[in-house]
Length: 343
Image (cartoon, rainbow, N blue to C red):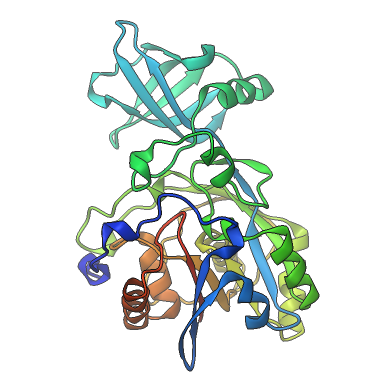
């Protein structure tokens, strides 16, 4: 499909620069069969049914943006995007053209690396001077939260360390938050439990692909970055039990949806325990096997995420939804408001 079909005018002042406080004060646009309803995230328990299952992404954002110097004293910035193990990371680094294979880089907090390889897409492979818990400790000390460029130019502060992490975060590995999960609080989780709504988790380490614009003219020629994910046995069983009992599966965020549907594509429509990499790219025409409801934030024009929600709920329907959201001044993107979509 032509990428320009997914374009729309978004006022820049609607891109949220900070989250609302408390988190569960965010607005929710309920995209229901009988129309569009302006609600709040605290209304979610009443929009679900007893026996429904919410699936969250329990990945944890790492402080993946590093600032440092080159041997001659020039500045360098690196965004870690994929862990190859043994202290080796794939990263986007600037200034890319000036960097040389074998060059040593020194980052804040004493963390050091060597450029092991350069790739055609502008990424590099960095070999760090430590691994395991020592690397994690150094990264927590040296790195910054990797905010997308649409939020304060990507410049994070101390508050973002808490703001850009979900209630469910426990497995280190993401360079972007699964932002639909940012709206949940212990009080909201208790209300969902009281309503008879079950919850379960998957892990998808969100990669830098979420930052990358679609530069091609046709979706067929866009390449997605691979991301590592895992569906545990308990979640696979919960999905199967929910289906058998007539309940609905609600993905909290596009990352949870992408992983569930990726696994289903590999197992004839069923969700099985699985771990591996997925580069699934969901556009209109995709056949959904698992997810019935999607809670997601409002996404940017021409983004792969807007293409996904258009596939899920219909392109013309989503253009209507976004026109309503813009007119009612909903807040967009990572720190913004959300909508509840039905397949």
